[in-house]
Amino acid sequence: MTNTFNSGEAGQSALLDPSRATHTSPGHGDAFTRHMYSLRYTPAHGWHDGELLPLAELSLHPATIGLHYAQVIFEGMKAFRQADGSVAVFRPWENARRFQRSAERMAMPKLPTELYVEGVDQVVAADQNELSDNPDHSLYLRPLMFGTDVNLMLRPSNDYLFLVMAFVAGGFFGDTVEAVSVFVSREHSRAMPGGTGDVKCAANYGPSFVAQRQAQEAGCQQVVWLDSAEHRWVEEMGGMNLFFVRGTGPDARICTSPLTGTLLPGVTRDSLLRIANRLGYGTEEAPITVDQWRADCASGEITEVFACGTAAVVTPVGSVRDRDGDWTVADGRMGPVTARLRRALVDLQQGRIADQDGWLHRVPSH
Image (cartoon, rainbow, N blue to C red; front, top):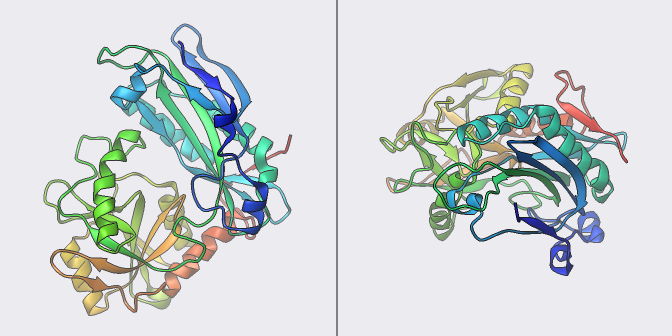
């Protein structure tokens, strides 16, 4: 394999300025920390040569299979500063298992969960001091694997590279938690039955950009995806899962679309379903059409809507733009159930409440 790392000046240009993470918003996606973890796979040697390295650019042959045939998978997860000053990763073992499912779907070798978590631990241990004690900041981790064979035959790669990198993250939609507006895509589809909608592969995301651009041109922050067959059933919002709140107060019910094989099984989605039950809310996984969403908001049956994901955490949805008519969710602001769920999730992630399920994986410092 001729692919190598290049640790020259260009590879260092996007490194984190520590003052940026501490005193200002680091934004989302480019305040990179100083290390990455690398692990290689070959059929002859299996997984080998795992090492922590300075963050650097990659030197790739133009015929690298992953570049041409999208044999690329990734994960998104976060580490949080805890109340005692330590750092913990939220549910890394679940992300490791989803990474395995993605690999299996893309005809790639399954990375053992312990090797996945070892790579995460190495990066977090090396770079955790670049995460301030600002509770609005976190360390976003990006495990990545791609085929590295230099060959343009239409086939799976034999050799692979697994990487873990990180950046200090602020809010995905900005520094404050405000309701977002969303655009219903009737023209494009994210996934179809039998496709790759339920795994995290790079090929799912590039085709979504045109619909996201349409959403932005319509004055919205995100796109809502519908099913590919009828373009009626609500599936996801951008790269996030959607939740609907029916009713108010202690009788409120939390509803989300079922996992039909075309939706990504979000780790945050699963966490919120469990947290909601613990808080006394009823939960339900049931399909909903765009027309029903609109009608139930008009009648007051749906009182709140929010999206969730590693990056978005819990983000309220305030208004919807659709070709058949726009509408507002309640008063267009974050509702009390959404706020309570968000606070419970964040408090758990930051170690302010008991971790009843053992979801926090504490990482020792080097």
